[in-house]
Image (tube, rainbow, N blue to C red; front, side):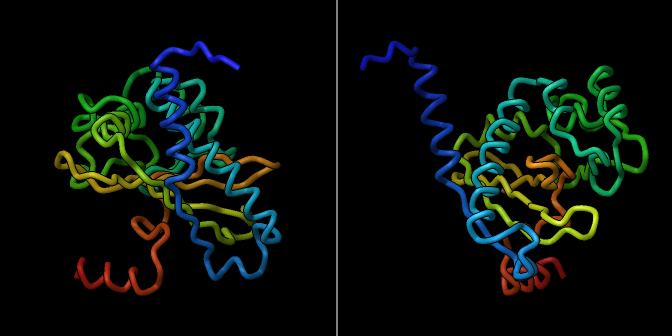
Length: 212
């Protein structure tokens, strides 16, 4: 069979396959109660989550606000602790402020304001996620699935980590997801607790010593 796809299509396909394969899965000890199902069900959820994450990164690169809204949890989307409702997010994308700046536009990050106590940690993030992805084309995805409480039994934190340090930038950005009605929906950025996605207890302890 002959495929007549463009070189760009081939590159996109290769990039997508790399995204799926360059991933690590950490199952929290809390998952021993099978909050995310049997081992086979957990593996199925992991595949779904990788595919969802691939779609999410394409949405960010494409600046597609309506598609992003389709992935937001019914309870809203937390940004460093403050909760944005779907209507908040829609308004911010329309006005090109708040979450729009964090995801899409570096130019307005420093001056942007969020409602409801959400904010951008400017000590960590001075570029948009979209620009970060452009600067760090080689990345790996680390996934941690665990029990998220009575409201969301199966929860996941994802770290998108750069592989090569080509330019000064944060090593990773994080997204949190909840599993609801057979699909993964966005819960937060960064994942909570911040910086601990896929860290073993020893790595968490080392991180605390470094920050002290």
